[in-house]
Amino acid sequence: MADFSLPETFSPLTSEQIIAKEKSMMDARRFEHCIGVSRTAVKLAKLNHYDVNKAALTGFIHDYAKQIPVPIYQQTIREQGFDPDLLNYNRAIWHGIVGSWFIKHDLKITDPEIITAVKRHTTGDVTMTTLDKIVFVADFIEPGRDFPGVEEARKVAYADLDAGVGYELAHTLAFLIAQRAKIYPKTLLAYNQWAVKN
Image (cartoon, rainbow, N blue to C red; front, top):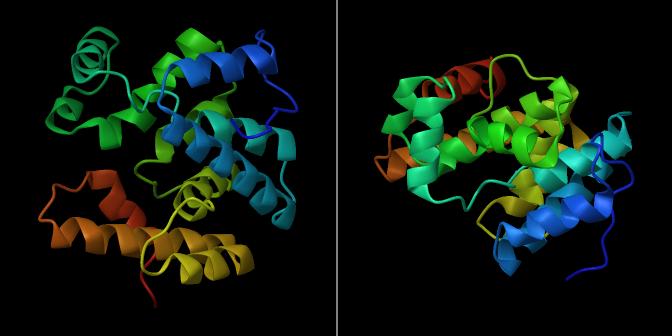
């Protein structure tokens, strides 16, 4: 495990307890990704004059629920009042929107801004707070990412956070369309808001 600590938890749990719970929920590669996102979120927070502690925590926990088994997700969607249409998608969408429920339930984090940023990190949205944008972009450009265009994405995001959101949405939609994959409606709306060049 990389040397890592959380400066503040926004939870009755200690940072050590949150780190241990998260580590137990995922494989080593995913855990290292979460550390990378947390550190990238801090860098983006500093560049955009945002709360570094909140960015660090949200970046770290954004994928807390990523590897929860599909049947548990399906059960949670049915039993916790989520939009039933979510059953037509998969963990790529669920781990943000439905994952927020597990974060509240398991990690006792209820800060509305943190929860919303976790929900939006898989889909984007028409309206996004600074924290939403930081986590959305940090997830895309953290040091462990290696895909064509990632260096350009980093350059754009570190220069202008909104432009970074737009770059990511354009890249993501191009990828999904190439795969003929189903696109979550909010992601299309977010693309129209942040990525279209006028």
